[in-house]
Amino acid sequence: MTGKNIFTTFILIIALLVLPGSFALAQEHSEEGDSHASELHEEEDEFDPGTFILDHIADSHEWHIYTNKHGHHVSVYLLVIVYTKDKGINIFSSKHLAHGHVYEGFRIMEEGDHKGQIVEVDEEGNVIEGKLPLDFSITKNITAMIIAALLLLWLFVSLARSYRRTGISAPKGIQGFLEPIVMFVRDDIAIPNIGEHKYEKYMPYLLTAFFFILINNLMGLVPVLPGGANVTGNIAVTMVLALFTFFITQFSGNKQYWGHIFNTPGVPFWLKPIMIPVELIGMFSKPFALMVRLFANITAGHIIVLSLVSLIFIFKSLAVAPVSILFVLFMDLLELLVAFLQAYVFTLLSALFIGLAVQEHH
Amino acid sequence: MILANSLATPAIGTIFWTTLIFGLLLVLLRVFAWKPILAAVKAREDSIKSSLEAADDARRDMERLMADNEAIMKEARAERDILMKEARDVRDKMIGEAKNQAKTEADRIVEKARTGIKKEKQTAITEIRDYVAELSIEIAGKILKENLKGLPEQEKLINNLLDDIDLTRN
Image 1 (cartoon, rainbow over the protein chains, first blue to last red):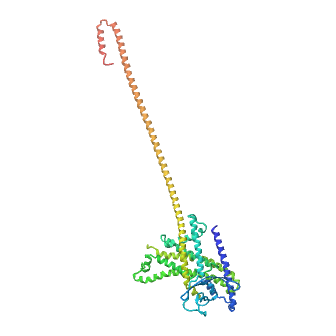
Image 2 (image 1 turned 180 degrees about the vertical axis):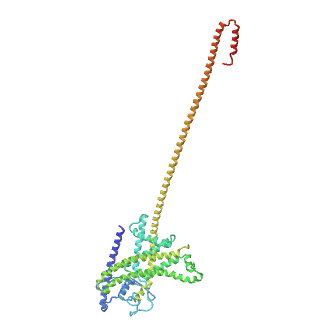
Image 3 (image 1 turned 90 degrees about the vertical axis):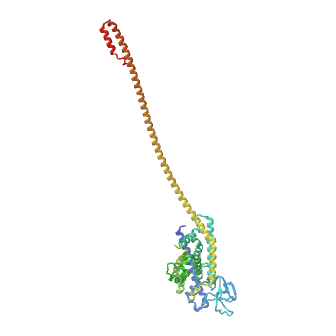
């Protein structure tokens, strides 16, 4: 199969995945609107794109698939794990909390400051203000992340097994597709930034981060289960990833690295005390930038796609649909690029920061 | 935007599970995927590298061998030339020597022959002289027998003649 053929097939698959997905997304909301219509006639025509978009990019305790004609939601209910001082650990299905139901004194807020979060309620159904219960639920994002992790495990463990089988012969099958990416991470990210002698130690982290971000980015582009969760557009997820880079950097830091922070070379002695806080801020701003960059890029992409879908409902015209779909298709292709790009940028910068921490004085 | 605010607030549960899942994924992939994959790729690269080096070595050996062959050939050719030259010299020398020897021998033979001839000639001359002398004496005797009848002049003549004969000559 030639490279061009593979590319065409790839584009076709993406198009097939994206187009029906966009329809499904659109349909879902229109029907959702109908279901709400029975309850709220006066708000039937009200479409709030802001709420619509944020509902779709936010995390959720259930994985909504679609709502049927009769207004029934078809969702995958996930595990709720909440902890409060009084009640201890509570584990139950999010089915009990669906549509604002109260269960075991908990409910999911549908409006207000804590929208989407689990709050405690008293017997009369009033929200107990103050501290929120600690929510360790397996949310939509966590579920998507587990699926992604399992997918990665399956992919790369079978890849490793195929290496054991074929020995040192030329790569074939799945090796031919994944090996160049692994080699890219090694030859173009790790070695140039960390150096020939020290990169090997950091390869597992860089590879894992790269493929974890990539697969979650890609799955985030697929609008139906198991895709559609906004994992890498979740600030907590990107924060954890950035913290991994941060701690690896700090623990790898050699004398040179710490010397640079606390005794900046080439600076007059009276400037040195001022340089310490500057360097310390730099230490934390690097992972902070990593966190925000990935979060903002992925979230922005999702917001644009959802905004374009919203156009159909804002104009209340089917004629807008083809335009929206074309734009969404274009955006999805752009997001496909961004998915790779952000995985690359995160890994590259991680390697760069680690490289700065381990470099030897010349 | 309250909702946007909630988007930018990391949730504790997500942090917890992400750390756990990512950490676990990192450990599992490290042990079961990255190490064997990177090792296999490295092994392949090393094998390719060493194969290339071996091929290079072989090529260099080949070149060296060919150069050696060339040198040996050259040497052999030079040696052959030397041998040929020597042989030619020896031949020339032998011919020269043989010529010289033959000439000397011939000269010697000629000289010997000449000496022999000379000797023979001398002998012959002596013999002839003796014979002539005998003959002369005989003739003279015969003449004398006829004429020497007591003539004092004749006796004087004879004595003169006898004085003239040099007996030292042969």
